[in-house]
Length: 235
Image (cartoon, rainbow, N blue to C red; front, side):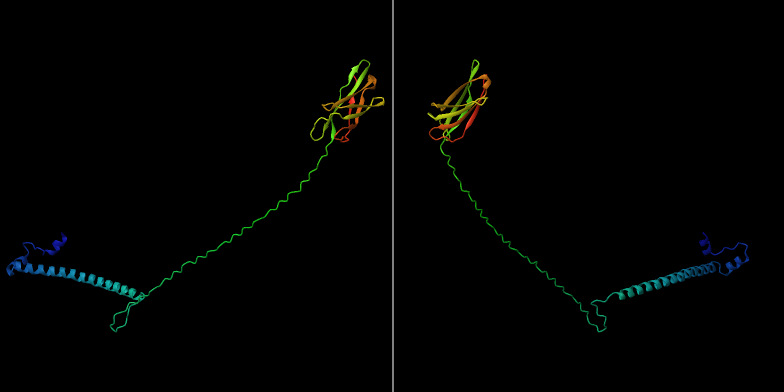
C-alpha cells in the first residue's frame, strides 16, 4: 500500500489556493507529467541496480572461466601440437606387443630296476640210521602168589622183535633172583608163541621182596643186551 501511495501524486485539499491555480493553468496535464517522471526515476533505480549485479556476475564468470582455462592448460599435453604453423596434430599411437612364453614341460623317465634274488636252499643230507634187528624185553611183571607161610615169587617176561614188535617164540631167558636177606639163585624159562615165559622161587614171607633181573636172552634175532629188573612182593 505504501508503494502505491508513493507512486500516486499527493492530493491537495479543496481549499488549497494552489488547487485553483492548477485548474486554471491546465489542471490534469500537470498531474500526468509528474507521474511519468516518477516512473522514469523508479525504472532508472532498478536498471542501475541490475546493471551493477550483472557486472558483478560477469566478473565472477570471467574469473571462473579463466581459472578453468588455466587448470586445463596445466594438464600434460600428450599428442597435441601447440605450434602456430597451422598443421593438424598427429596422433601418436604406441603399439604394445605382449610375448607369451609357453611353459617348458620336462618329462623325467624313471628307470625301474628289478633285482631278482636267487635263493638257494640247501637240503641237508639225510642220514639214515639203520637199527639192527634185535630181540628185546618189552614186559617184566610181578605175578607172585601166596603159599601159606611162604609165597611164590613169580616173575613173567615177554620178548619181542625190536622193529616189527613180533613175539619171539622159543627164546631162552635167564634170571638172577635175590631175596631180602641176600640169598641168590638163577632161573631160566623159554618163551611160548606169545613171547612170554615166567620163573618161580618159593620164599618165606620174611624174605620178601625178591629182586628178579633178566641177565641174558638167547633168541633169534639176538638180544639187544638191555637188562630189566622187577621186585616180587609177598602177601
